[in-house]
Length: 165
Image (cartoon, rainbow, N blue to C red; front, side, top):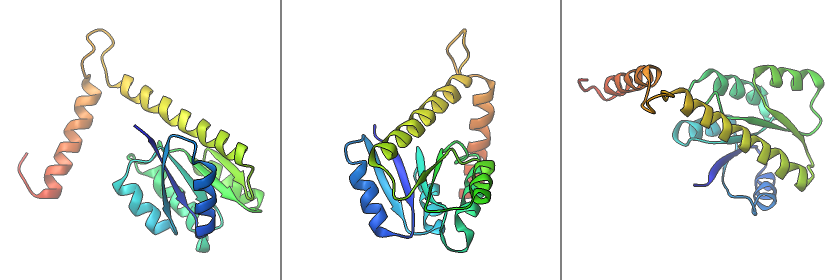
């Protein structure tokens, strides 16, 4: 199964450049023109890495990063910020919010692929670790943490659709 990447940038030409630079990679690429659209996509699709333009209007990028990192469903998604000439303060703020990396525009195609591969590898390993944490080492069965997580998810689902549990 292909891993999924989301580009959030207000420049359609940049979307095309990233698509062409990552064409050889086994990754499914989605694009969003702004933070609101990107957040909407994150609610419906499980992404493995997000490329986020730090220079979105109205400081939307840092707000979006904060929202994604505070949501348990999206907190493990690595975020790589795309930056033209961002100040050190904005870079530090982004890293403190949970960003994984930065790529400076215009970017070197080889560097872009290497950083995206590293982020995808990181996400894959985090997913493996998360799965292993839910399995009992002796029996190979789901453990109490998995039960608690599924119970909460099913209870919330029943509340949302108005059915009994």
